[in-house]
Image 1: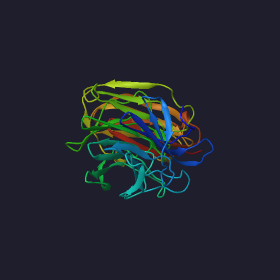
Image 2: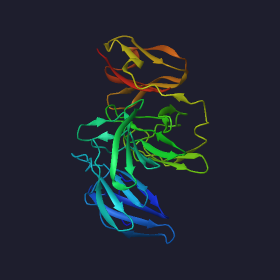
Image 3: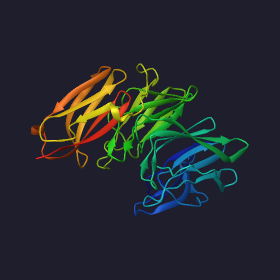
Image 4: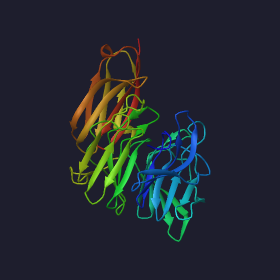
Length: 342
């Protein structure tokens, strides 16, 4: 067992050891702990604590160092700081800070570059819709050059990320604005700066899930997580995908556009017309949620053709109230609000 229970963590692997730093304990206290699991001896030990406790951060290992990226106190303050733990000396230093606060997103490393995929800025109450990159200077490991990179097709926090063979795989996530999870599975091809969509994950997956690449076997695993972002009930299974780049014909991602989904009228008593527009054919889910985030109707679940698909929902099918309709898949994730009035 670990020395103590904690949540909102990531681990990093280096030289037959797993490093777990910070997190939140069962009393909602933010931790500054730094603990390492030795695989060979099946034992835990305690190392020098991180100078500032945090949770929801990213953790990666590079060249004998553990980098702890962003995070927050899970209440009012999000962090821009990046801390580096030198394994050989057992000491901490401060690396180049992020341009903005970041937490609760996918964090992966390829070569000497950290990739932050989606995430959340607690200070601005903003969910990110792009990738950040942080290039570590091999000659000065505290020097990181941060840059905003390619846009994602949707706003997403609580996503998972892993890297393999020059690609960053991004799975799931959660739009804090509408409190909806996603089935999206994306790949960012680093060499050509291209973002592609892959086969949709079998379920929506968000919050506290893990994505792992099994290098040398060309496999990606999605583990556990929360299907709808409400913490009840987290799932207890995992899926494996072999040859993720070859599982189907990959397609360029269509960056999220408000015009991809239309609802008319937005306030009405009778029939509401809903249409979504695709740049290419693909699997699409079109679901209606009530004001507290519960799905009440599935309007479409299948392969949609390129162009515009139009459907209707009647006021007779829904009681008076506020609703959200979401088009999800084929490179889009867009949500619109409408109201059924008396």
